[in-house]
Structures are given as structure tokens and as C-alpha cells.
Length: 301
Image (cartoon, rainbow, N blue to C red; front, side, top):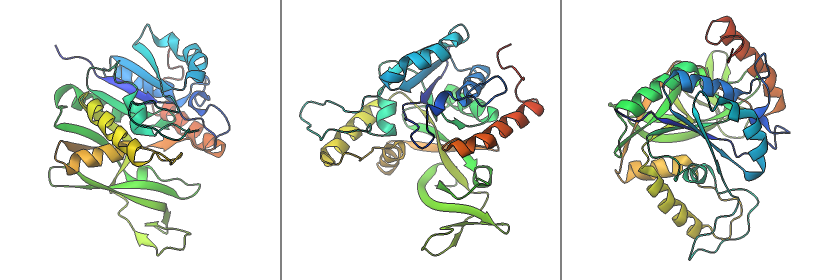
């Protein structure tokens, strides 16, 4: 019998732009944060464990909020330190951790099965959890991992421009590269990037897949992340803001032909909460999901 996949939730960000611990700010009708909808979807999609990556100072707030789900799914917490001590590597004192790849790595000792990675303050859609769970259960291997690809127009904001990683895929729907496009917005039925910047406007297909940092990994990736992070630390010992992101390690492994990354298309809408001004949009989106029957009014009744 195959092991159930794990959901790794990255929740160590401070929410400085939001003005508080946005990961547990209430969005639903009973003050449910976005994470609870992700947990609900994960349980219904067959995940067997939730692992939170948090800062140690968040521990009490998170346990108070999420330990109540331990009767429904296994819950674990791991901590992302700001400074990393590695023998033979000396780096400057930092005020921010080493990035999302490092956040994944801190879960190395508690995950031995295929796992998905999401951000705590982003909503990914119920259907997407089933898609990634099916992949992790049936197809994931050290040489084949995955990314959920969202349709660009399902991730745009009505309140301003967004930055997105536009995915180039091959004929097998495997990821070739992620091209970062900034200041994307729809204008008169056309989606452009560089909107409102000094750069020349460029059009982008509104139906192109984009990366919203929703990954499906085999646990063998931990060793590769560890090697990559240590190399990155050696290359950036005096840069207090250098960060080693998940796309960095994914790109390196694709280029070196260590693995292929399948882009799994989803029609789900994605939304995130970065600023306090984003909250009304998130509340409205969840309210619509409830009206459409995707979620019950009370998730856990």
C-alpha cells in the first residue's frame, strides 16, 4: 500500500507588508484563515499529514489554531531559523532566512514520502489538491516531479499589476523554464507585462500556464536542496538578503537532467493575500466558493 502524500505549508514569513500574522487572519465566515481551506482540501484529497514550516516565535499561535485538526490529519511543525550554521561555511549575520528552498529543507527529517509544497497565505483551489495528490500517489519519482500550472488569467488582480513566472513547456507538458514577467495586467482585453513601467509593453497569452509555487516533490529532493543551499551560501557569504528559492533548485535539476517536472494544468482560480487591501477580495472569493457549494458554511461542523 502506497504512503499517503504530505502537504508542506510554508508559513515562516512575517507578513510585514500585511501588518500582522496574515497566515492565521480570518477570511471565512467563521474567521477561518486561508490555510484552513487548504487543510480541508488536503484531507478530502487523500493527504495523510500536514507539516507547517514556521518561525519558532510563531509556535504558540500556530499550535493554538491548528492542533485541533490532529484528530483529522497528522500535524507537525518545523522551524526555519534565520541564520544557518554549516561546518566550513561562514556567513554574515542575517535578519531574514535563506529563502523558500531553505524553508523546504527544514522539513527533511519529518517527511519520507512524496509531498506537495504551498504557501500558507495563498488559495489554490479544491481541484488542484486532487490533481497533485493523484500525481504524488501514482507518478512521483526521483526523476519525475511536478508543478501545478495555473492559467494566467485566473491569477490576475483587479487591483493592480502582478508578477508571474510564465512557464514554457515541451510537447510532453514538462517544464522547460520559468520566465519571470513583471507588472502584468489586463488592458482592453489584452494581457500585457511591463504595465506602468519604463520598459516596453509586451503581450502575453492570457491562457499560458504560470507557476504559483505549488510543487509536487519526491523526498529525494532534500539532498539536492541541501547541496544547492550550501553552494549558494558559499557564493553569497556577505549578502544578508540573498535567498535560495525553490525555482533555483528546480531549474538546476532540470538543466542537469536529474529530473523532469510535469506541469499539471488546473482551471482553479488562485488568489493570495499580500496586503491588508487584498482581504476583502479574499473574503468575497471564499464567500462565492461557499455559495457555489465548494465548501460548507462551517468547514468543520
